[in-house]
Length: 286
Image (cartoon, rainbow, N blue to C red; front, side, top):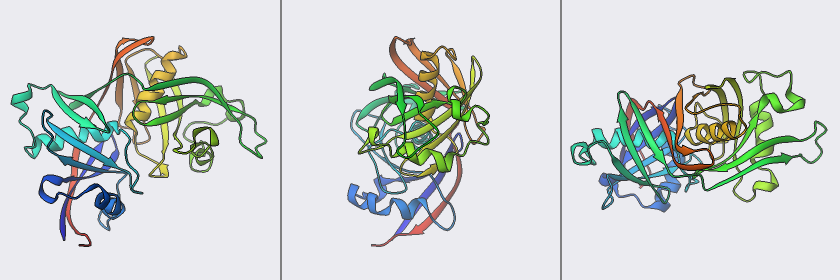
């Protein structure tokens, strides 16, 4: 069977996108195919976005990690889904007047165009737990302290400057690939685990961020929900002030802001680019 795949970038976070109105692939089939679709000979991406119609919404989008896991929100993917759906006539933007309602990961979201960027409006965090100290078994370097935040995807956030054992380490030189898995799989976060975020604030309005994502099991070019979670944590700790520009590994910035106050968040906004970078037709097993 031939499958048309579009490749998109959300601030350097790379996605394979399919219009499932054409194929009607069921959930079990998409779990099975996600690795194939995300890891073709032509292009390797960090997630699969599956677009379809849904009554009372502009569209529905389902997100799958390359390993087939699912059920988590993806902020950068959401922006790509808005742009893809608009271009492929899944909805009529004139009807929604730039208030684009969509359904993703069991929750309602709104997307808006802002010049060349897309803004996604998130509901308040599901859970925030501050000042979590983690110590690894057989680890001699001591504890690290961070914040756990769930915004539809679960994140553990660590400020590099506040960890004594990494005091002389820069964020660019931080050994993310060897260190992050220890915390991604930490027993405190079992059974799902978490995404691991390490950041360094440049000033009150700007932070550098690197994210190790579960499901990818590696560092991604950017992570939208990681950016949101990290900014909320840094503002709570009086390190930054809204709005905050987040510079991820890709160096393509996103902006995080809120409606309300840090003690009473009404909505969270994630603003950044979403662009088409290619397309392909691949053969998938029948």
